[in-house]
Length: 263
Image 1 (cartoon, rainbow, N blue to C red):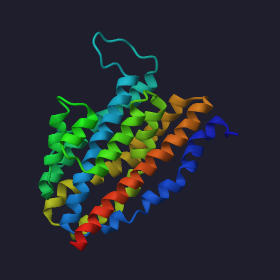
Image 2 (spheres, rainbow, N blue to C red):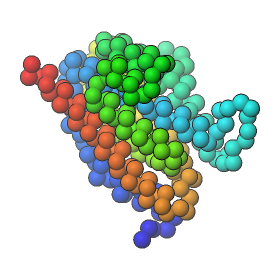
Image 3 (cartoon, rainbow, N blue to C red):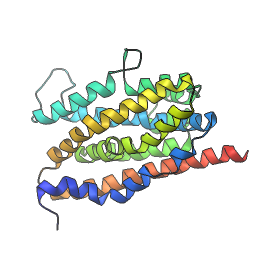
Image 4 (cartoon, helix red, strand yellow):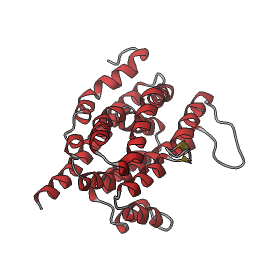
């Protein structure tokens, strides 16, 4: 039997703790030792940064009105939560004082670090005339990134807001601070100035996610699921699956990194 409603958030975190521990302690972070390794990571991970923005905008579309003529939405609490998160994710301040989305900050960090941006650029261009899957194929997106993005959209396309909120919260915001701390420490101790924008991006994400976005996102799940036990159960399953997808993504990037060491 499910615990009382007030404990459902604790329950969903507890049920996904094994996956969280694997992500927190994944060997990938300590395996990024050279510039080539970092480039490989960024060239894969940028697709996850893009699909995160798509998850967020899907939630905003659901719980705020982004259509003309405007009509009020029934849950002002969710509208406020989503608009606060979107404000930072879509128009944050970069290290030069400019307002950019986190995706654009990541893209510029790739440029600064010398990573190849052609595949993500081609992907965005293809989206103007092709669907998601074909855009990934035509742009020669890395297979691991393609699989990860398509896995995300399998849930998004279900049009079940509680599952999209779970992807956003458990698959992204809640786990990111623990995932990226070690990477930031290594970059700060070993890098030259060419990684300053990437370090800023990671630091900014850690701070926002830990202090602001994770508490807001957890409130969002609670607000959406309410006292619906079926939604809570589905959210637990979704949380496990999207975190396992991230683990697989990290495993595949690690495999590509190890291949460069044997060539």
